[in-house]
Length: 129
Image (cartoon, rainbow, N blue to C red; front, side):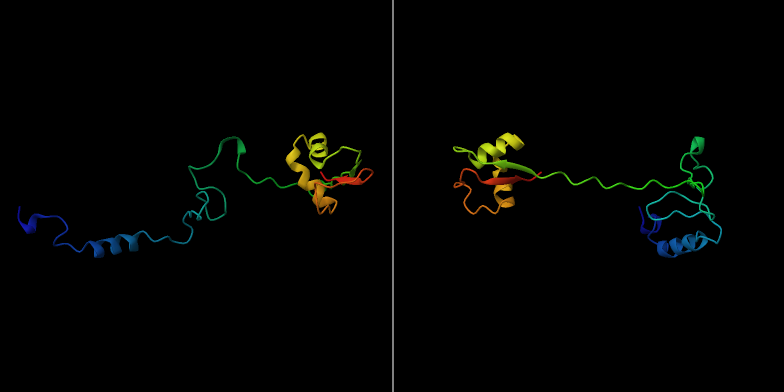
């Protein structure tokens, strides 16, 4: 095989690519494809051949006199309280309210308890959600 018969050796591939790219540049009115979207026509509708059946994908506009639903804020949850009885531990209280004794830290921090191992009877605890 001679060097003259090998493809690309004697041709200017870069020049050919530039010619092809110049002929394929988009012209005004051509369909365009946004970065992450679907192919669209200049008027914003999907380009021919890419429409969805049954009117799917069309933008619905609400009627002018139709009120839009407002998101209602949920009422704040009532704070639960617990009065410590003799022999109670934060671990046991967490198990009874959360089902998990490891949640005792939530109760301790909500009630500003410095030492979770020492709680006194009659103490009114706030149980956070």
